[in-house]
Length: 209
Ligand code: ATP
Ligand code: AMP
Ligand code: MG
Image (cartoon, rainbow, N blue to C red):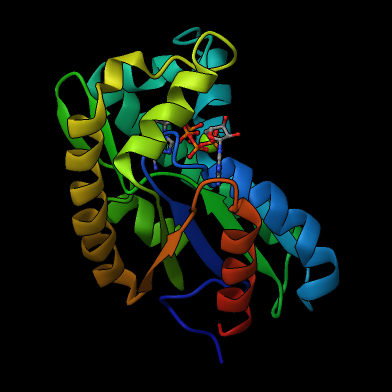
């Protein structure tokens, strides 16, 4: 049966504040899924698609510049990314397969908190499930510190208190984004040194869709 609120393949959003470990956990999911997930699994990073579109327009060179662009530019890139992701997945996946989108339910920008999954994005992605990865604010601050100057520039996002505040908004926006497509929402812990446990939990959740 075709459902207006669903894509033919399953769609899971994996979200969480910057530095919590989404991309790391999803690396484990990709590896474990080969043996433990019955369908084909495609993991796409929303920021990669936004960045590629921004680079094409000469708007940004680096992923951590995206949240500093003008608001309307970010809105436009967000919609382009959602469309390209579903277009790409539709070519590769069918019923029984799953798409995971590595993204954010809330983005902290210089002009305020901004929903990562507003109506125009949810209506394209049509998620079955929204997973919110969490860890303690202290652990997240330490993880960000370890990355700084290597690959990522997250200094603008503040310290432990700012992380705790953003985590609160990440929960609220995850639930709000679940409403239009009737998605379920689950918190998954990513404890220090145990990213593989979080990955196993995500695979269990995918199998329930
Ligand atoms: P962003 O939203 O900015 O892309 P992210 O949520 O994808 O961030 P990662 O880049 O995956 O975060 O991880 C941030 C840092 O935390 C990396 O250095 C990674 O190795 C480390 N990390 C991730 N999970 C754990 C864990 N369970 N224990 C210890 N370190 C971790
Ligand atoms: P990430 O690598 O997950 O941090 O993504 C890079 C950047 O892409 C983020 O810092 C945001 O600026 C942007 N981004 C990712 N997902 C979204 C989204 N759903 N809505 C708006 N911006 C996003
Ligand atoms: Mg990431």
